[in-house]
Length: 267
Ligand code: DGL
Image (cartoon, rainbow, N blue to C red; front, top):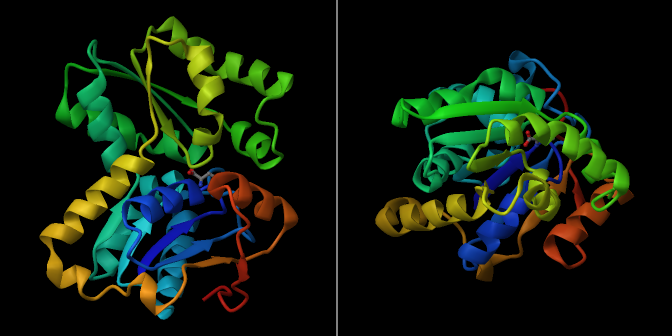
């Protein structure tokens, strides 16, 4: 199976893109709702949780891992690659590629959680590819709770977005990376606020396309993955809540069965 993990249900934006791009493959998802948010935690804690999440997915048959959480990808991807001998995909690389390709003026904005922005990973990777580019980053810690409350079109959300995006607007960024699982749900508002000229990047589809290409060119890996005919996709969470079910419904446009993953524990 393709194993996907996130700190909660926001990563389902990535799972959905993978379901659409690779409808024949089976997915197993884990959302660590009991310990969310990751974005305000230390790199050590996020890395430890990430390893536990991968162990959980491996125990359920995953043979390839997708880190859907930006906060986890930004601080734990290296450790995961060093620890596990299996293909590990994450959301940051494809977003960086897209940003570098789409920015005409070399002024890229990045928004994310505190952990992601503090890691400096987007700046580093963008400037490794284009050292003539300037990267302007802004942590937006209030956006995750607003999305989780379903405040997708409220006046308060617009006001907070205006405040967060003002410095990036002032810097006249021409590209803006949505460096967090939850922000695609605010994409329209963000686009309106930052202006039509700015290319707003959500990496989930690019990641799904990379994964599809990888499986086509690596049939020996594709062979180890189970297919939809062998069972349904499994969506586990470490805490089942009504709010999570609602977000999942909004992301997929259908009712989702969220399975309790009560055997994850603190390994
Ligand atoms: N999944 C996290 C991310 O993409 C957002 C939620 C959290 O802070 O845990 O950074």
